[in-house]
Image (cartoon, rainbow, N blue to C red; front, top):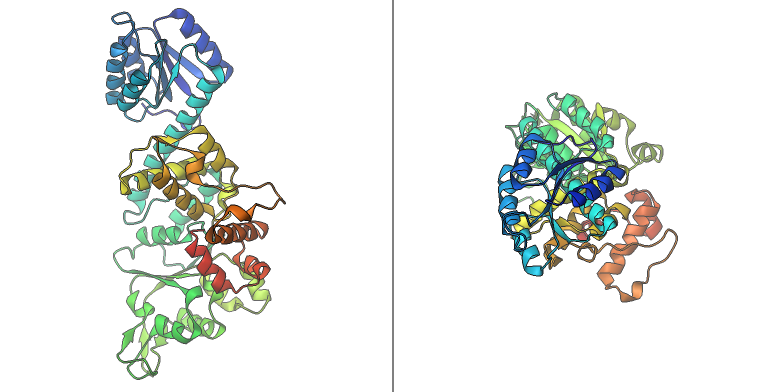
Amino acid sequence: MSPNQTAAPQVLIADDQPAVLDALRLLLKEEGWRVVTASRPVEILKAVESHALDAVVMDLNYARDTTSGKEGLDVLGRVRALDATLPIVVMTAYGSVQGAVEAMRRGAADYIEKPWDDERLVAILRTQIELSRARRTNERLATENKRLAPNAPALVAGSRAMQSVLELIDRVAASDANVLITGEHGTRKEVVAQRLHAASNRASRPLITVNAGGLSEGVAESELFGHVKGAFTDAKTDRVGCFELADGGTLFLDEIANMAAKLQAKLLRVLQTGEFQRVGSSRTLRADVRVLAATNADIKAEIAGGRFREDLLYRLNTVEIRLPPLRDRRDDIPRLATHFLGEYSARYRKTLHGFDDDATAAMQAHGWPGNVRELQHAVERAVLMARTGFITSDDLGLRASAPGSAADLSGMTMDDAEKYIIQQALARNGGNVVQAAESLGMSRSALYRRIQQHGL
């Protein structure tokens, strides 16, 4: 049975000594947790079948065999067969490395020796319960994502801050309305665009993605609308533009706020009439395209500064979907980390059971100026660096400093120092790339390139 994701944890304690059961029952009830007890292997199996458990704490030794732990290991295997996702923490008064290794091999999440340390036991259980709930939420969300948008990547979002976002996506996905997706860099605006397309009536048609901010003015028009042979020096053949490629489907224009003014005017005309011309041609073409656009800039400030057309904004944002930064949806950090852990563990063929307590604390304490993309790259790095079955804080490689303090750059490589400086600039400016670029004395396009280079 699956436990309620928001209810107080319910833990099964299994031991053949009544004093142990009483002590653990009192300890966990002080934490506000619900407790189920069992004193025999058959009772353990019945409890797993009949209760919505979040974790099991079980002894390895029972009446049949009081020292080797074989009976407990057998029960552990049978519990795993009943519920492969249920975290199991084993205990033994005859703790040995061999017994712990065998228990972990058979599926135990962790182990602890008697007499136990109360704080450590509670910390282990809390970590395992949070990871288990995150995994189950990910599975539920993945199933829902597959039902609503079978061709889109999973959008892991169980926090309250993301609920209105998910509801809005589901409400507008089937329409042909243009959508403006806003939010700081790294909040996965492109994933929202993919989900919108995959859940729309255009899902069988192309989704074409263009980084509007990365196009130079000289090639942008040709990229969007195409050109004919001889239109300019390097135009050796006719070229089909992105609007033609997306006909019947969806065009995703990323970093729209950085589009050149001349191109904004041409884009506005296409959105108003559905008509355009290839560069060098007088022939008018039409395309049935739904436009999704994204930006991390303060679009109103861009309009006030004369850098973005207000009439174009009205055409783009029939509906606006604003993604919150990761620091405002910290409940999703364990879910996202677990999701990426599964993805990269499979990719790099490594067996990893989760994150240790220090790694979990480090992720929750980190500011994540690079948002979900930064977390994704941190977990990928950790998977590659991990030397044990659990990710450690060292594996994550997160650099933290107190507010207002300066990090020691002397021990960093040039790449690490540049990444750190960019992170701090983004943090100071609330994730606003335009303002961060100005504070660093570089162009927006140059900062974008470095953000992509460092995986922020």
